Amino acid sequence: MKKIKYLFFIAPFIFSSCSDDDFGVSPIIEEVSVPETVDVTYTSGTANFSKFVSVGNSLTAGYSDGALFIDGQTNSFPNILAQQFALAGGGNFTQPLMKDNLGGLLLGGNQITSNRLFLSFASGSPSPIPISGTPTTEVSNVLAGPFSNMGVPGAKSYHLAAPGYGNVAGVATGLANPYFARMATSANATVIGDAVVQSPTFFSLWIGNNDVLGFATSGGAGIDQKGNLNPATYGGNDITDPNVFASVYNGLLSGLTATGGKGIVSNLPSVTIIPYFTTVPYNAIPLDAATAAMLNQAFAPYNGGLLQLQGMGAVSAAEVSRRTVHFTSGKNPVLILDENLTNLTVYNPALTNMRQATSADLLVLTSRTFLGTTVGGNASLINGVSVPLADKWVLTPEEQDAVGTAIEAYNITIEALAQQYGLAFFDANALLTQLVNGGITQNGIKTTGVYATGGGFSLDGVHPSPRGYAIIANGMIDAINLKYGSNLPKVNVGNYKGLYIN
Image (cartoon, rainbow, N blue to C red; front, side, top):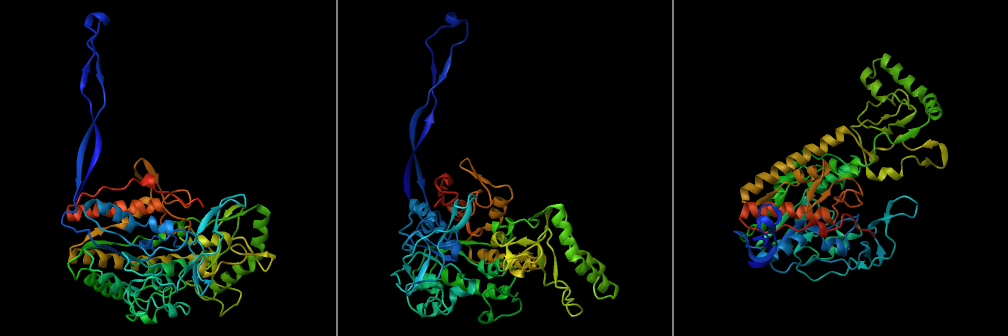
């Protein structure tokens, strides 16, 4: 425990020396502030913070602006927590720091991941672009641990228990993770094994986001593997079966608590509320009347073909209405492909599965620089206008349902196992939902989920900013204090940036 002295102020009443007769009024009472020191003792309650180990993915590692870099790791939520734990017996907290603030990774001298994003004004308007420079972090230079922060960007739940996930030789072929390769204790080590061997007295576990995120960010290009219990057959963008997740998660907690350690687990936020899916509007196509009329003429055969097949009973009137393409003067919905529509190309190859987007569709953040570009320099072939966007640019309502169903199942598992193992539970879903729906005010600063300007998310639209991580840490501190009877103070979010400037 540690005692911290704070200055509070007492206000004794000091009466003026003036009499009633001097002014014809009652004696004046003046309030004067006099400093007084008060000792505050911080305790861990029933928890023990002496050996804190944090397990998870990029959110645990401190990933931000599309990369992992020193400043981001310094502002990771586990590092913020460790600083507060130090006030109540917490020990040293080590992280596998990158070599620079560029964020890119090298393998054999060749760059294999991109540098972090920064907000450039070179084009005249703010635009996120990778920062220039050659990174210096070589994956094959394995660091000597152990490390308290076992957050591995890109890791799914079942990856944490996979032997060889940090094998440097497997990084080039995609069979291993370059971030874990930098810190794995051996070529055959597992993330959870390297965490458990440290016998943590306190841990955090936040995992599962990537079990759906790849599917979502790829516009649903993967497969929902519900019912497939063999993750070895999964693709990188697939959704993990809920039973696989539950089994793996239980195994992770069994290991982390084996030596009597306590900890905190976090559920998963709704993926579709993050800026990556809410920044690009569905009706992002501005047209004048003449251009709209020209486009309507071009799509007349397509609309006519739909009506013809409706008359043949090949497609319903409701679907024809949904697929009919019509432009007007002003803002127009983006033209997209939708694999959930009836395949009519067997009747007419020109009747592809295209329709205009609705407010229920979510365009991915990266589509903002693709919309309006031409195909092969042909001015009449405009992506999102005369040429439909491919599936990877849009998350349709059906795909959103698959993501939401999986997250709901994962969250039920996480909360139930938190209770079973007697752990603190952090409702990240509720906190981040509040952040994007109205914002969160702490220390007089309002933080929202608005892309680039809200202060809560970084420029990749997925990962928090330093201030976002601080807000998350504060939420976890509340949950820890509630569960274990500790009285850890929260951090001042004003000390953390809402966005890295350069």
